[in-house]
Length: 153
Image (tube, rainbow, N blue to C red; front, top):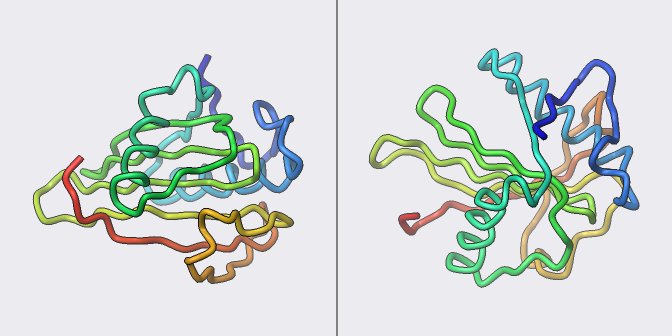
C-alpha cells in the first residue's frame, strides 16, 4: 500500500531492515520536502514488490548504461511525472537512494542520481564515482553523484 512520506515527522516505516534506517528515512524525507516545496507534489512510495516496474526500470538503465548491478536489495520505490519530468526513485537496504530523472520532451535532461545516507560506505559497484557532500537538516550529510543517460528507455 502506498505511503505518503512525511518530512515533518520522519519515520523509518518500510526501511526498518536497513542498518542506517534513521539516516535513510531522513534522506527519503529530504526528497519528499524537495518535491513538496518545488512542485507541490506529495512524495509517495510503495514496497519494492508493489513498485517492481520502477525497480526494474532503474535496474535496466544502470545495467545497460554503465554495467552497474546494485548488490543491496531494494526496499521501496516510486515513479511519477511532474511538470514534464518522469521521476523514478529506488531506496535500498544499504542506505543508497537512486533516482532516474527523465524529461519527457525530446532532447531533455536524462540522468541517474545516487545519494548515500549518512553513515554508509560507498558501495563497491559505485566506487568509480566521485561524491559531493551536501548538508541536510533531515538527513545529516548526504553524498551524491550522477551520470547522464545516453540511451532511450
